[in-house]
Image 1 (cartoon, rainbow, N blue to C red):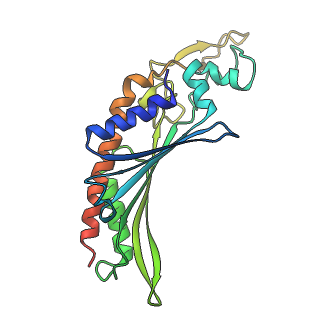
Image 2 (image 1 turned 45 degrees about the vertical axis):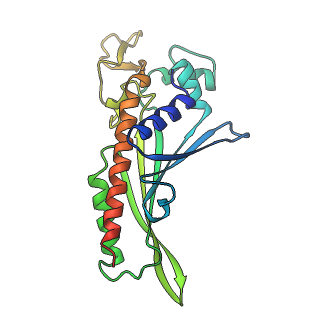
Image 3 (image 1 turned 90 degrees about the vertical axis):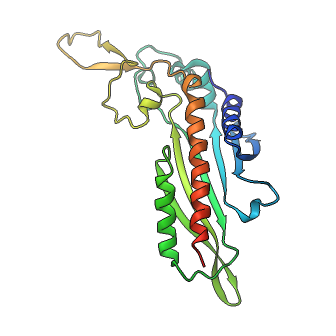
Length: 241
């Protein structure tokens, strides 16, 4: 069983172990009952934070996650309809992951970028961030602009990353890049009990992925990535002149 509180605690503990300064915020949507978490992270002191890169890590915990946490795959059935042993919810590996959104920013303080150019700068940013990210499966760089003295000047370098944690996937982290055809030892193969005795096709019964066993180490790796990308951002910014 894994709860929203467990997940936020695991992240904050991992960040603290790497000496990341954290500023967590928590919300609940009273209409949808979704719970949201966002935490701004940076290195160094808070007094000097505006001069360095920062990262906001956020995720949403839905009522579906609560059902899965409490009951496992059968919780999906309880969530939508009466349980049925033949329900496809119990025989699938197509379970959405928990998505962590990582939003990085580093201030340029409206510096007039001469070398490298903005295009080269964002490409360098994407390359360096990708090199230092072991868990992110998407990286998108960007630049925010501001008008000053009738000129558009770059104000902030931004970077968006997406990390998928298959905490309810029957195969755990090994199912992160599952293509739907994989059959692991954590899947229980069940034969169709019907007249087609010669049919070799089987069903996948979702097993207990036990995210509480492996998630702390994975979250530590995510925070290590955050630390390395923050360092890479500051290094890229130092090349702006």
